[in-house]
Length: 507
Ligand SMILES: Nc1nc2c(ncn2[C@@H]2O[C@H](COP(=O)(O)OP(=O)(O)OP(=O)(O)O)[C@@H](O)[C@H]2O)c(=O)[nH]1
Ligand SMILES: [Mg+2]
Image (cartoon, rainbow, N blue to C red; front, side, top):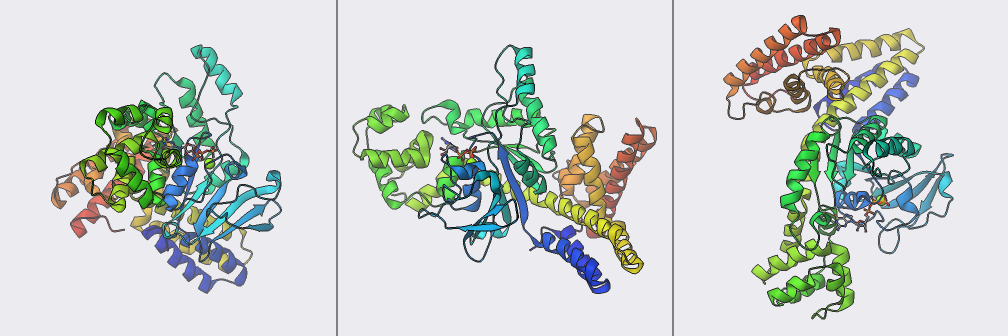
């Protein structure tokens, strides 16, 4: 499986090159080819106990990553598709130690090797979700960012609590940087006056080679925002919007999620017995239910028709908001089956939007990111190839590819990256237009004309191309001018393709 059209084209090119060059260069090109065939790799990063592993389990659709304290929460773990379940601790010397999955189906709490010797844990699972996505779970970023914290605390006269710290261990940084996309999980609100939080967030993202092009923010554990069983969405929605605006130079958007409900639902943890217990509770008088759901302590200890062990389990699976939500659903429809209840819980967790965003945003971008990576690898192979004939073959092939209109997206992505991270300054509206052009496939979204037909879109693309050409000549400095030339050609190609196909850009 390859990520998308650019990657597919690149894979075909690799095959063509392999047929023409000698065995040495051929093997190196094969390596690039193999990496292209791997699924999109997404790293999950964030502070200690932010809910990273919980989200990883939801994405995999199986509870395998430990979420309690244990050795495994302190090493990088890569989850990929395999024809049989298998866990290996990969040591720094390159050797592997096979580990059994625990009886509960989870990665064992102890690795049996000193942590200092472990580079990462490699987990192959038969999980279908992993056919499309390789997920990398990283340990919580340490909270010892003394320099930054001290400075920020002095400035603000309060203790610094950044959602991320620049102090990331080398293994995590390397794994995250090797991923095509990054999801940051954070739990506390980032406010405009949290200078330190924003600075730390940016410092961390710069070290992890991420940008709004390839990174998403997840505002996690939103059920704990408002307390009790109250609905967090009226608060979480607007907060996430605001944070998205504050972090716009770091992540593409901020998606609010109740990771726990997503994990419980996606990993199929809620049983018919759990559902029956919830059903029984839902028949209590409204006043009594309100008291029961007022706090975790009351839910555990109040006399109720469900035994305390089951209640503790429900708390672990759903927490108060999830329980309250389930009780309301069952109260309104006592015949509700477990399957339908789980579906509604997942919907209430906000997870479908996250899945959609990963699919729509990251996958499409990853195609270009991966193709760009492969291109630079091939150029490097050419540079190191001893025989002149092989070198020429490689160079001809990559140059031919770069002339193809579809490959202009690589250049667009490169300049958008520079603009999005603030290295080249453009007026806000121009910046946004460029990022839309580089990161989305839908002409109507790029041109902000949701209801326009092909003719109108083509005219708008021509207009935009002209505008960027004028800006390239008359605009600000040379850096802006180069960016504008790339954008000009991008809109020109968009207009051409709209004219020839009538609708979509050929991909
Ligand atoms: N209420 C609630 N609890 C959550 C949510 N997500 C995670 N938790 C709980 O928070 C705790 C920490 O979650 P983890 O997923 O282990 O967090 P982590 O970021 O992987 O932690 P480290 O790897 O140790 O840094 C666990 O007890 C989870 O059950 C959520 O959305 N809501
Ligand atoms: Mg963890």
